[in-house]
Image (cartoon, rainbow, N blue to C red; front, side):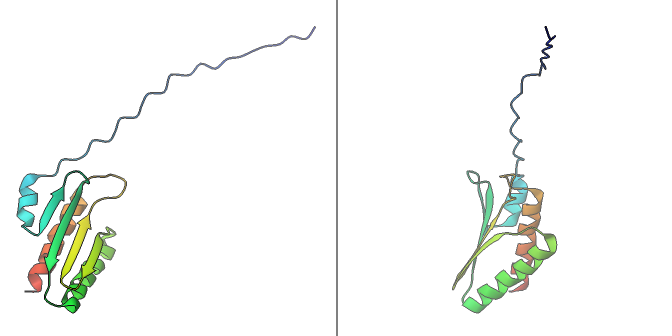
Length: 116
């Protein structure tokens, strides 16, 4: 009769991965961004709205944001209408407002200041 050996491998029970802690957005920095910006806590985004009197001005403003976004490799969602540019900042995969988002918002504010 043939000899049969059965081996069993014991494994540790899998533990549930902890959800990544959502970084807290410093309220002082949010206030410093000004009234153009709001923090959507439900969606974890920064939303900026900038008014323009001409579509060409709105388009040029969005173009300047796009150039900076390409340099930083951090891309906002930009919606251009004839009189308003809406910029939404968030970091994909993290579902939170990060330092990169705050830095981009501050840069957009400097772009806004230079158009006046």
